[in-house]
Length: 97
Image: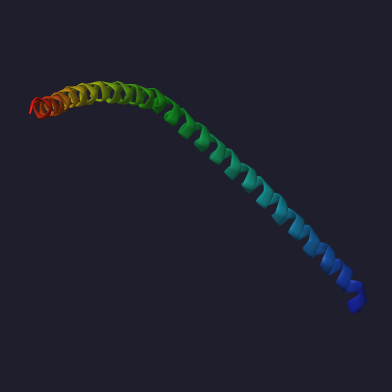
C-alpha cells in the first residue's frame, strides 16, 4: 500500500472518531443545559416566595414615610405659626412707635 492509498483510510477513521467525540460533547452540553434550567427554575421559585416579603416591607416603608411626613409637616406648621406671630408682633410694635 502506498501513502496515497492509506491517507483516505486514516482520514476516514479520524473523521469517525471526531464525529463520535462531537456526539458525546453534544449530549454532555444538553445535560448541562438541563441542569442549569432546573437551577434557574429553583432560584425563580425562591425569589417569588420573597416577593411577598418585599411587598410588605415596601408597604410598611410607605406608611412610615407618610407618617413622618405628616408629623414633620405639623411641626413645620407650628413653627411657622410661632415665627410669623413673632414677626407680626414686631411689625405691630414698630407701627405703634
